[in-house]
Amino acid sequence: MKNIIIFGAPGSGKGTYSAELVSKYGLGHISTGDVLRGEIKAGSELGKIAKGYIDNGQLIPDALMIDILAATYDKCSGCQGVIFDGFPRTIAQAEALKAMLTERGHDMGVMIELVVPEDVLMARLLNRAVEQGRADDNEETIKKRFEVYNNQTAPLSAWFEKEGIRRVFRWEEHPSKDEMVKAICDSLDA
Ligand code: AMP
Image 1 (tube, rainbow, N blue to C red):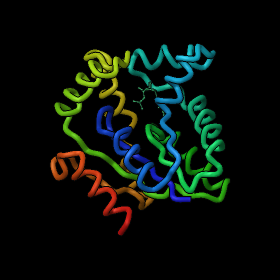
Image 2: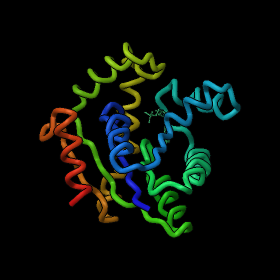
Image 3: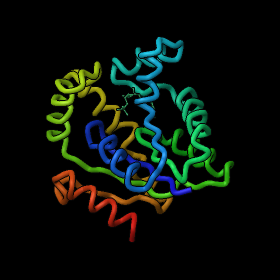
Image 4: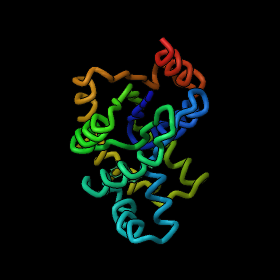
């Protein structure tokens, strides 16, 4: 199993770079945001619960999210590895992910952190609102999501560093998509 955790603020490009890595390395892709949006579209009970949190820019409670993640991961049992996109977002989720993988004889692999200045993130998300019409891509909810990211998710960066698997990629050093893809792939292939 070659697992990758892709980590960064809303709008940092987690989905975009996951797609590149999926096609280059033939990995499975678990985007917890996509899983939740799928449940909302399907009108399921889980979707109804998730919608309230997502529309307010808040995180879905850890216990629920951890169950969803484990069920989704077990569907990828035939994969060579998985990209975790949007999970973990809290220390509790990270601990649960590590335990879940250890139980299955797998490991977390590599963590890729995308660091992008907030003004660039805001511009990208407002642009995505026009292109994709995501309900949570409006200025008020974006600000809330940044706050949640800074308070609850960003501290995980140090957690991954302690695990010895963190690799940081800065927008300032690789401003175009192609440069960023190359830097990430060079690091993974080294
Ligand atoms: P994303 O598409 O990754 O930006 O996720 C969109 C929204 O889904 C987030 O703002 C959260 O409300 C929710 N969400 C996605 N992943 C998680 C997670 N790992 N933990 C809690 N909430 C999540």
